[in-house]
Amino acid sequence: MHPTALARLRSVLQTHVDQGLLPGAVALVHHQGHTVLHAAVGHQRPPSAESAVPAMAPDTVFRIYSMTKPIASLVAMMLMEEGRLLLSHPVAHYLPAFAGQRVYDAATGTTTPVQREATVHDLLRHTAGLSYAWEVGTVPDAYRAARVGSRRHSNADLVAALGPLPLVHQPGTRWEYSRATDVLGAVLEVIEGESLGALLQRRVFGPLGMHDTGFSVPAAQQHRLAEAFERDPQTGIGMPLIDVTAPPVFESAGGGLVSTASDYARFLQLMLGRGTAPGPDGPNGIDAPVRLLGRATVDFMTADHLGSLPVAGDILPTGYGFGLGVAVRTATGQATRPGSAGHYSWSGLGGTFFFVDPAEDLFAILLTQAPGQLRYLCELYPALVYAALQ
Image (spheres, rainbow, N blue to C red):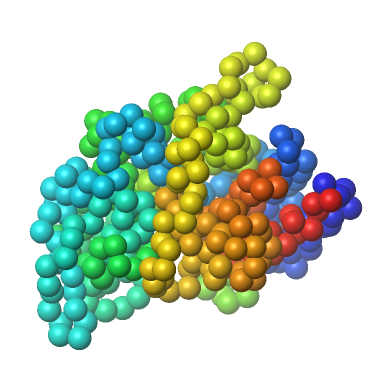
């Protein structure tokens, strides 16, 4: 990679800190088996007149929100390989609260039975007819009344509240970003017979050496936790982040994890390695490589599973389909950001983003806590990274 372009990447991020758009950021780029950039700029928290603010460090801990989804989806793929989970099974096979679902018809104000039941495959690709209820309307109002997504609810409570509510479209007919991965987390808990946090630790974080990843930050490590501005510097909109200083009741498969750039890089090494990663001690360490998934299964997970299905909203960029937990680039062109066909990515509400490009043997991670800048950063960061390729 071109060293001047890599230096420019860091300089651009520093400029955004200097302009007051970001408190700080950590960027990591891994190319052809080597980490070629792991840089920290700015501070872990917004500057304060009352006390010294620690500088951003490479091992700073961030709330990664929806970058949790690919990890939960990986575990579903592992269970599929073991014959313990079928993607074709109805969700109700594992969660009876999802039996007999109905679809809301806005034109008539009534509900009709589903034409077919939502499957685990629908959960993984966000075609289950569920929603995030960000807008106003009958179904979103029902979500809010049932307190769907409350941090005080367990995954079992979420299922009990969400299962009986009407769907926003017929399963399998439309992509809509939703609570589907949270429901998937409940499915994983039922199959494994333990909490989501415990099974992720046993099946992914422990084997990969992801020591700083989990649903909360231990008290002894909370000095490493990044924070956002109280309000977005451009819009003035408040930016509250989830409290991760104590173990939550709701272990959200869709958005609850904290992690570091190094830890998430371990996960992306596994993905780029098509299911196999170097041992936790590194490529030259004494540990044997860690294999969590077969290469064909990773290819299946990171292929486009939407085809010509319509897409609701503007969360999925033009030029992208969706796989099982990740957005998938369908062509080198069409999109407004650089990337090869087959490249896959996702982001997190708090201001985090990653992409993996198998064609270039490349992955990159950007971690900030700046929710209001997320869309801009998802456009900016790939341009800076791809500019460094020789």
